[in-house]
Each structure stands twice: as C-alpha cells, then as structure tokens.
Length: 528
Ligand code: ADP
Ligand code: ZN
Image 1: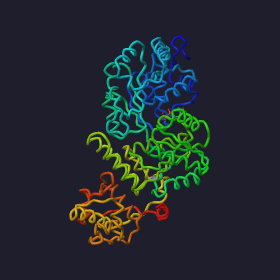
Image 2 (image 1 turned 180 degrees about the vertical axis):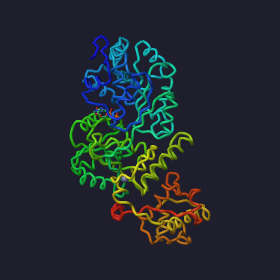
Image 3 (image 1 turned 45 degrees about the horizontal axis):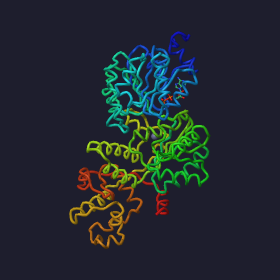
Image 4 (image 1 turned 90 degrees about the horizontal axis):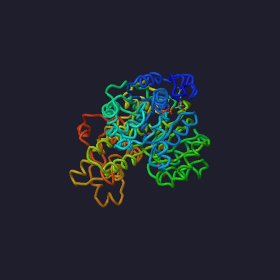
C-alpha cells in the first residue's frame, strides 16, 4: 500500500500494478529494479522497446527521494513527464526551454521532497549550481539514459556526458543506472569505466529484434524503389523514411505525396511549429509516413511503426540498428529496408575526409563506415552480422533478405585485378587518379571525350573488361571498397588501391563477390 506520508510504494510489484497497470515484469526488469532498490549500481543494455524506463522509474517510486534522470532528449521531456503525471507519478523536468517561474516551482517541489522523478539535461549536471541545488533535496538514484553517448568511439558522442563521471565522486552512496539500446563491447566497457560503474551489476539483454526483417537492396532509382516497396508491402502502414540531407527529405516527401501516400517531412531546418505538427500527426494518426533526417526519432514511442526505410547509407551500424529499431516496438512483423549504392560510399568517404576534427576522429568515422559496408555486402545472414557487431552470437534467422534469397557468390578475382591494375598503372605511368565512372569507361573500352583527351585507349587495360556491364562494374567497385581493397579520396571520389590489394594483384588472394540481381540494372539504365 502507498504510504501517504511519504507517497512511496512498499514494493516494486505494487508500483508496477498500481501505477503502470502491468501484471508482471519483463525480462530482467525485476532483477535490475531490485539491484537499485538495494542501493547497487546497474548497467543495462536492452533493445528499443525492451522496457528500460521502468527500470529506473519504479525504483524511484520505492526509494526515498527523487530519481534524477539524465536524458539528452530535451524535446521529449515534456511528453515523458506528461505521461507519468497522467498515471499519478510526481514528475518534472528542468531544461532550457522553461521560463523562470516554472523552473522555480520545480526546484521548490524537488527541495520539498514532492517529486518522484526529475528529468535533467546532461549539460546542467556539469554546473556547480545544479549540484548544490541537488544537495538541497534527497536523491533516490541517478539514471543515465542513452548512456552510449559517453563513448568517444561510439557514433553519438556527447561531450556533456563526460561530466557525468563526477556523479560517483560527489554522491558515492546514491545508486546509479546507465541504460542504452545500442552498445558494442567497446562502448559497453567505455560506459562502465567513464561513468565509474566498476561495482555495477551488468544486464545485457539480447539485441535481437526477431520481428524486424532486415533487407538491403542495390540503389538504382531510390525514390521509385522506395515507392514500390511501400506500395506492395506497407500500403497503409505508418513508417519512417530516413534520408541524409534536408533537400532529399523534402524531395522524397513531395514525391511520395504526389504518388498518393500520406508522407510528411521532418528535419531541423523546418519551422519548429511545422516540425511539432508533423511529429504529432505521425504519433496520433494512422498510416502516416514521416520522411526525416536522423534528427527524428530518438525516444519517439510509437509502437506500430511497420517499416523503417533508409534511402541513404547510415553512417554506422549502431545508427542503422537504432533507426531500424524504431520499427515494430509492438512485436508485430516489420521491415527494415535500406537501399544503397556506390555513390553513397563515395559521398560518405568525402564527408569523412572533409569532416572537422583530428585524424583519430576521421579514423573512427571510417571504421564505422567500413562496418556498415560489410553489413551491406555480406553474403551471410544480416541478423547474424548485426548481432555479431554487438558481440552477440546467433544462428541464421531465416527471415532476412540474404537468408530468404542467398546471394550467389562469384569469383571476382580477375575483374578485381583488371580494375586494380588499371588504377596502379594510371598512377605509376601517368600520375593520374580517376573516379569509378571513368575507370569503368576505360575497362569497357568506351571512346568518350575524356578517354580520347587522355589517350586512355592506348592503355594496356583499355577494353579488357567489356565482358561486364556498367552496372556489374559499379558493383565490383563498391564491393572492393567494402572489402577494403580500394579506397576513395577527395571531392571527386578518386579511387586508390590499398595495401591489402597487393595480394590480389600478386595473385595470392581470391576475391569473392556478391552476384547482383538484373532487375536493378534495368532500373539504373532508365535512370541515367
Ligand atoms: P525502451 O525505453 O527500452 O525502448 P520502454 O520503457 O519505452 O522501452 O517500454 C516499451 C513499452 O513496453 C512501453 O509501452 C512500456 O509501457 C511497455 N512495458 C515495459 N515494461 C512492461 C511490462 N513489464 N509489462 C508490460 N508492458 C511493459
Ligand atoms: Zn537472416
């Protein structure tokens, strides 16, 4: 029974039933909650939809004092607090969007012990004023949400998170819980060490999302491919389409609208009111498709998103996993669909080359991209690949594209040698570098103005690749990039051979390539 004097619950089970109306705990929730109620620390790795929120909300309702929730999702604090208030939890937030009066009231409530949960933005906790303020009330626990943001090698590093290591020094007796839905082994270790969670108990749930079907297709005409995917498989469903740029978001939303779909754009450049309205419609109405940059979706809790489509290559496997993870929180069959092509690789390499930051930073971005490419080009189960990236072993799922239609592999050693040696010769003999388009023209023996201008029809490798189509050659280039035998540089995406390519050129290493389906080839011809 809730004790009116302290407004707390005697047990976790009671809070679960009374406040949230659920019968039982899921997965490891009960153990995690017990660990915190008992005053211990916890590190929780659990996929989206696994039920992380209860893991800190319930201990905050049982332990004396206020649970302090650190969350980077300022835009969602209001929604989270509203949802809790609606079920009788005394919750509030502190962030920069508030006026002074509201903030003063929240602070008074906290100091008076009238709050079960208080959400704060991470940057607040680095200020001494905030810490002194927290000392004036009683802290039940600290919950650090999206804890992977503390990892400098992760895909979503936020410097403000580093200051959270001080929580342990300042409040050694307050239990802390770090939670994330995406963490490689390395990130898991970084969370543990940076947040001083050496004494914590670790709860690592399976990252598998069995109801999500993963599919990755060759990019030819992305918008048409997307439209046909939606119309044939998810005609009236809610979904999210991710694109890299604001321009592409708007063009894609318009294209889908013109094709009779209920699509709305979302990106940081839109007016805040338009953005809020589109997000609200997506959450409340049925069958809305939101076309967005990755600015959209963190913390969005819409259970019946039936598909997540990417029309541009995500920058990392973590990002891909997190974004596709927004599909199917209700456990029903859903699709994670991605289209990608050579141009994505060239573009992203260029962005990495041009990105601010030091060499270590660019190396990190590069490693993230390589892992993403390996996932795209794998001939094995996508899910096995994805879970292995997060350090988890699994069996082929039978439900992803590569399981359903195993891609035929072919021996691409000879085409690889032809391409690599063309690049090497051009550099050695003429000190020239070119992008994929011109190299393929040389290999296929096309007489273009550029070929004539440079006399490239005199090269010994001119026209030695006429047996493969343009599309097939682009596939070879893309896969050699993914396998680390080629690298692209600079604004024009010029190709260079890597050290690893020497073995192929010497005939000491075979190159296995994925067979590319014909269908995409026709579409690409039409597009050009
Ligand atoms: P996460 O933060 O891990 O993505 P949430 O905490 O948002 O997940 O929970 C996902 C959904 O599952 C929510 O709708 C939540 O109410 C529900 N849920 C969580 N725990 C339970 C439970 N023990 N029983 C029933 N539903 C639960
Ligand atoms: Zn599979």
